[in-house]
Image 1 (cartoon, rainbow, N blue to C red):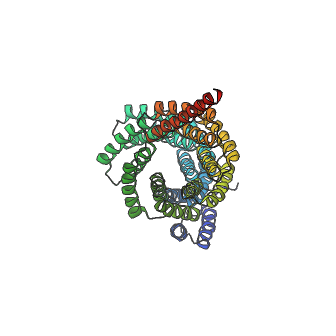
Image 2 (cartoon, one colour; image 1 turned 60 degrees about the vertical axis):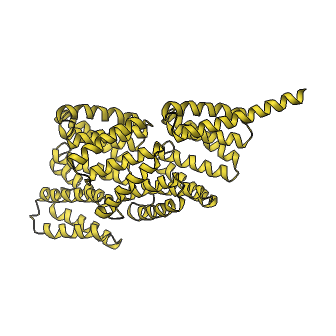
Image 3 (cartoon, rainbow, N blue to C red; image 1 turned 180 degrees about the vertical axis):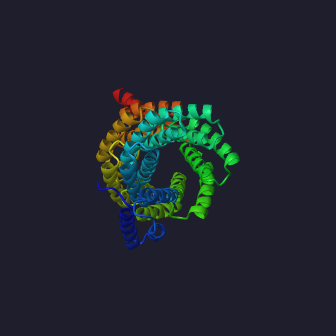
Length: 454
């Protein structure tokens, strides 16, 4: 690679800006054009200063959720700093960390994890494992692991971070609060809802006092708490809290920002769980369309939006639409996220439910058993998602008249839900009623058999 100059950098940025303008990305194009105008008069050998200015622009793009721009310019900054300053220079590591964040935003989690791991290893070696920049790198890497479904690794790293930050920064420092919130999110993913709620309530309360009720971080932890409420079956609380977060994000960030889309998707899921299906569909169509335009067809958030909409179609009885969209979504998720990613497994489980409602019992059984095995391997025997899939399999067995198989699965599901969710959770109550129904049918069969034998 030739040594970068101010001229070569500006030429590359101009190419990117023109491409954005041709695609209608006017905000990104305008920011780049403005930066180019300011840098044109810099000396040709001042590429380091130019890279610094572009690095600031990358941070702006990250803050706006403009992941493609952050990636395109972030690569230029990384390449320039590696060439001129070396791969272990602090400025180079900062640029690499920012590029990893851009990859994270695009859902390119393998690339984000690889780059984040390199930055973390260098910072541990050069700065020590308790330096603030090292801790930032570890936090970002833990978040990437969680996105990949590597929840155990994420939890271990987040517990280490929290111990160091509480000891060195105090419990009310914004960085410490962020680590508490990240750990809570991982607990939710692991199905540890009570632990997650306890931590999320704590971090929301402190963020409101330290940062303010409408701070970006406060809104993030409120949204996560709303998602935990939903997983616990506390749907009214979930809707109330997520609606407030969505209103604030719409006003401050606009309807196309990724965080706004996340709130819309979360609220739609709660609506679906409450059987407010028209409202759910309206939000999910909007989320999918905007995600496709802003993030791309195969971005994880776009794929999840498609999966959610397919689930709503199924609940509405639009089984053909649900099957078509669900099949496309599962294929895309397998290709881009992997077969054993939690999002892929959820989409596969929903597609199996659609098959069952279409009367395709054998296909539903085969797919559900496949999902169940993958969930047991990746999430564990008693994860709430595993237990939900077991409940689905029980329903399939009942529809097939396989009552003894249904009894075995129903008993396992109820035991797991009582242990993980508690005896009064709506899912636990549903499993108890399901098992009683199976018992009643088996009891009637046995009574009939005895009467026949007389």
